[in-house]
Image (cartoon, rainbow, N blue to C red):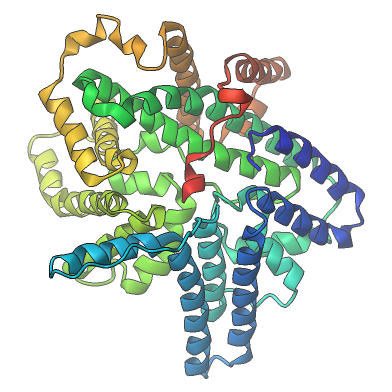
Length: 496
């Protein structure tokens, strides 16, 4: 069941209505049932898998809590059991073919030929997200950051809460579990949370249907046959893919945050105007924040973080981003994409002393608007280049894509009208530019005020509030791209 489906348009109001009608003590059970129904909309078999992960991590949390802080060996044994069992499930369903093919390629170098696997493994939607969320809980219990949850219903809802189940944000137990517990105690209705939630959902649908799915029309036309297009078309496609990916994923997060807020639950933010970042390291503090912070707390810092030698620090950075790459997909082009993020950050850190000295010697005004814009543009360029490998089906395709840009770039193609034959005509492109301009204003507002779309609207006078809501609502209805058969495109991050 997708957020953009008619089924969800019926499902969500029914869930909210019954949620607020029910006695408070029954609300956790109702949301748990609704969450499993939501998840089973893709495949009923998925419910058994998430239930297995839930039971394992629930029992591991209780098991760790059984041992006192002094009995480290017992606590660590239960922790390892929880981590290995859940990672084992993830590896089998997501990485089996990747590992099989990689091993087969290596042994073939020695004249050994492995048979093709006869298994038919389907990747369950959202498995990477809820696995990391459940693992974070077990690790937090081990670290004594949170107490083990004894109420199974409450814990099962923490793992399967439907707004953020299949594409995040990846929540922490200390943040979400306490709110789930509060469902049985808090007042029935919070007008501010409900209005905030509806505004965030409106903004999410605007990003998804007006920007992301419109960009997809061009991206999905060019990328599969990129070798037939010139450099200008490929650069335009790179830019469009950047907006498609950002608005597709950020829209899901906005809708998830909004839907949760309507139910009285606040989820953590997942995006913070990433295209205003002035470095790659800053970009990763603004993009997919819940995953970046998860990797920081459960991979980077345990490896030693930056509290070690420079060489070890750079090693830790590379391991963290390689983990991010493989988390995103079972393919070598995702591994390379993750490695590029780490390399950019390592090189940036290595060059920092030289850059500081250069700025001092030549009196560079690092706080000027021009300097800041230059940094933002450079970061955006690195984003586009590296994310080419994110979209390309193979590493060689990504390399050849970039090579064609260099070898077949003709700036005059911008003037001959050929760009309007790539999937979007002139009118559609104009709508896209207007929509991206609105996106830029909202992100600029966050950059200045550290506040999201809902705050921007609420800070206006009543007439302007209604006008902004009306403009977005009309644009969604009139200019929303609903795809073949009036079904919006699937969210990109569902495949992870």
